[in-house]
Length: 275
Image (cartoon, rainbow, N blue to C red; front, top):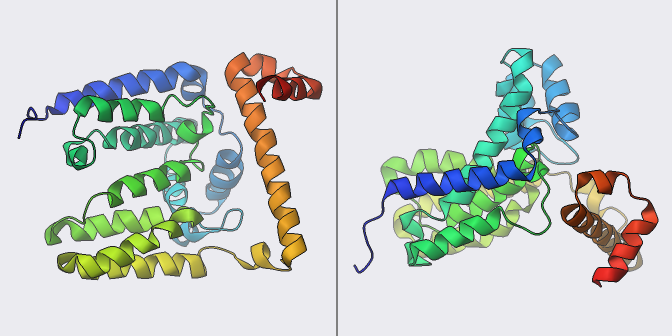
C-alpha cells in the first residue's frame, strides 16, 4: 500500500482538537452542569426514586431510549453531588468517541486520505447551527448513538469471536432511537451477502423489528391520520422545524445572551435578512 502506517497517536491528537473545539463552544455547560430539560426531569428525578433494574426499559416521550436509560440508571449509583458531572462527562466522551471513529484506519476503504477523514471528523463539531445538548446532554445522546450505529454499519461484522459484544452494542444503539429502523435494509442486505455473519445480521434484523413493535408507541402517532389531517400535521411540523432552525441560527450568530433577551420581532427580521 502507498499509505503510511497508521499511528494511533494521530487519533489521540485529533481527539484533543475535537475536545477543545467542543468545550470552547460553551465551557460552562461542561464545568457547571445543570441537568437541563429531560436529563433532570426524566432521568435524574426518575431514577433517583426508582431503583429497579427493569426501569431501564421505561418509555420517555413515546419510545425507549435504552442507552440514556442504562447510563442514567448506572450514574445514579454515584454520590448525588457527582451525578451531574457524570451525566455531562459521559455525553461528552461518547460524542468525542463517535466523532473520532471515522478517522480509524478501517475507514480508509471509503476515504483513503487520513487528512480528509480527519477533516470530516472536524466537521462533526463545527456545524453552523450548534447546540450543546447534542454533545453534553444524556437524553440527546440518542442522536450520536444513531450516528455511531451508521459508522459501525459502514464496516462488516467482526470475526465470530467478537460478534457477541458487537451484537450487544448494536442492539443497545438500535433500542435508543426510533429512527434506527432505517438500518433494517442494511441488515437484510448483509444477511444475503455475508454468509459468515448471516446469523448475527438476522438477530439484528429481529432486534430492530422488536424495538419498533415493543419499544415505540405508534398508536398515538398514526391514530386519526387521514389525508387532510396528515398534510396538516406535516405542515405544522415543517413550520415548527423552520422556527427552531431560525432561532438556532440566530443564537449561533449572535450568542446566547442576545438570544435570551431578544423579542419575537428580532427573529422575524433575522429570518427576512438571511432568506
